[in-house]
Length: 455
Image (cartoon, rainbow, N blue to C red; front, side):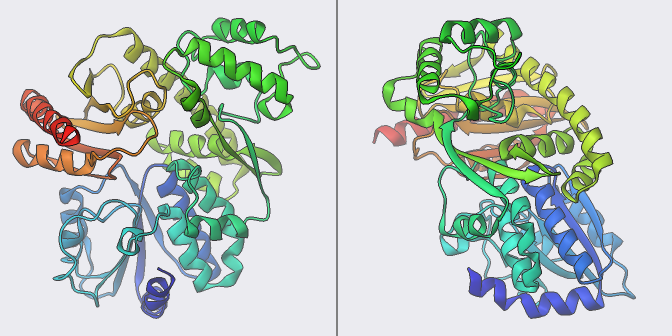
């Protein structure tokens, strides 16, 4: 993959020096950190550029881009953390196109104009790295001084949940981060916050009766025998080995589906990074950036990544609201009945959960062990423009033969819409008047997958 990055370096330099530069990136943590890394690198090259953050790359947006191209001036458009599902459309834009993405690739690469469209995706090289990691590795080739941006790449990596299975590419990035500390521990989020708050607002380990409940959290800590430390509860990093062991046992008893074998999945690497002069749990930084992006404050998230203290204050306020919205969504899922069949569950939230957090909600419950390992979880939420946003995940953390991106592809071929994502985390958008048809087609596809697994 390094050779592929090196091969486009010359064309990239030429384009940034002779073109109007536009960056278009995704609105989640990986997309925003990708944009921040590239922005910092271009600033060091003394280049002007604009940044647009989007929810998804719809065909209508690409058509608008084509129309906006100035015929009398060279244009360069760089797509980050999106584009792999729209390569054919992107190749039709009359500009120099660069795509740095790690999502599943749709369509053939053979007929693309390689002189105009430069595409790098780790799937092409059997590698695994986030978009932020990909952009970081590229800008380090552009200028070795960009090595100090490794921390942002790690935030993006954690945002895409790639931190517990470190690939060769991710390992390169981890070695570059001088302000990073890695510790083994219980994956309660955030490890740097007092335990009562970390448990109450945990988005990694969902505990019925505890997550989202201040009283439930205090009851659990009393049951565990963890005492106040200087008038506050200790954080995860301050616990003794015996206290960690007791806490794991108590959580296991509260989460009846958690066996001894699955206990290992709630213990892993905790990444601590110095940010704004303070040691922070990288998961919290990633979630804060994600919160701003999903609630429509991507400009604040970007400024936060670039070191603005004013943006930091605003981002923390937005993050507080996001945590409450997310816990409200999780409680709605817990308190309402959902339809489904053998091996799959459909959570049709309609307008009870915002389309901007349905994906995060699914990610949390998929790792909660509330549902059987391998269960296909599909969440739906109403979106503006008479559309429905869908997110799909696989319950548990074991490898599963189901490819969610292909499954959703098959459904939208029937109902209309656009899909994309990864094998284990995918999404789509389709017209609201096709709601019933979509559910029926999804059920057919999910049931067909169960038959394949048995065979």
